[in-house]
Length: 509
Image (cartoon, rainbow, N blue to C red; front, side, top):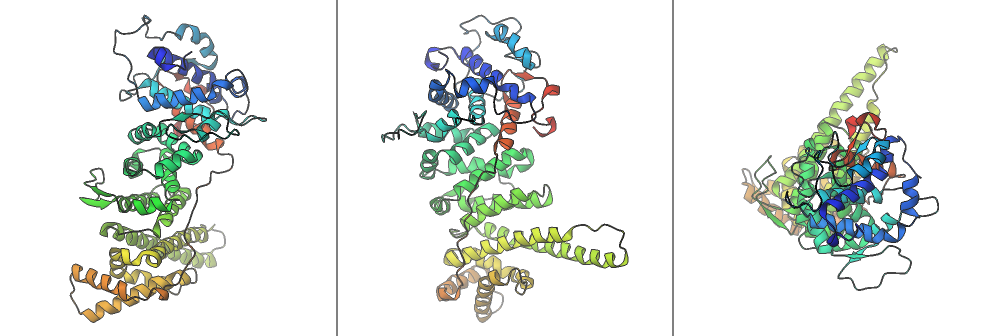
């Protein structure tokens, strides 16, 4: 009966959802991912199965509504003096088997999140993520994941195919609004990723929205404050961007959305900038942060893939975005020269001493050269496909033209340098003809005129840069510990003894 939220009290709804989380929390006390348990048996095959779509729909609506708890003094049932919930006495005997205490128990984190405005929405979202990430049974797929993959908009009147089980409909506009508003939490970002990746109906709907900035800006803010976020939250935000940039319509439309006064971007005052240029700035900043701090190749790869997907549709790049693209290339170039120098010195040293183990500079050099090539491909893709739309990028290229000289004859970059070299040579010649001491405005004017005069057939065509996000094999090895770390840290009124946690290390949650 707890599924029918309209006919039941707030407290019982929270308690019922918390009890289900407790039933499933045996996973916390196993290092390996559980693939079968009593909970799995009842939820996957038992009498719970017919309620799958109702449960998923209710949990989603609880998240959408963000309903606040009733004010003090309006409880239908008297509260216990120790603050425990209605079901505390009933559940605690079972809960102690797993060293869990329900609402208000010893060690409860109920007071740890004063900003949490809706315990029901939070608990519902955590349970939904737990259910969505249960492993498939040997003879049946996860029904909760099936429900999440297939639900449709209430405005979609087309019939569900008979092959789709656990189907239901939900108001996509309300869901989209809630997702936009709640992206400050890990779990809301993980839900957004799950829906974008697994439900083609919601992905199509979101990409067709004319207010995508409401969704993209909170994601960019997560990446911008990378120092304050855990690595998993940053990964999810970045993968969401990668999934969005797989769509050419998205890549075009973000340059048409003009934003004013982005207050959280503190490096420079941005009074007016397109969403596309802001996205480029934030992704480049993430790459630079990663280069100097975490040095995570996975993060690099996904950042560059998102930029590459967008590059053919770069439009009217903000001058600061164009500068940052070239500045990143400058940083990579310096890093390349430094490692090259270290490798040369190390090689000389090895000739005089055979006993000292050498650092693997060849591997470092290979990684840096891969990133440099990718950056050159991104610049080349923009010049080849939308040169006439991006005078600021041409200006930045010309301003730092010496930077590219060393790569013209490099065997790894010769082919991709052809177009860049041609553009630099062509426009440098026109600037030379115009005379010395030209103003910025005059240079941009010459560039705009030159774009019209440059024969397009002189630019060599390369295969289109396109990258698609694919989950790793056995994604549950990543997602199940991540989801349970969110439950451990964010569940309202639930406590697990940290000494008994086996699924993840306590310093990585």
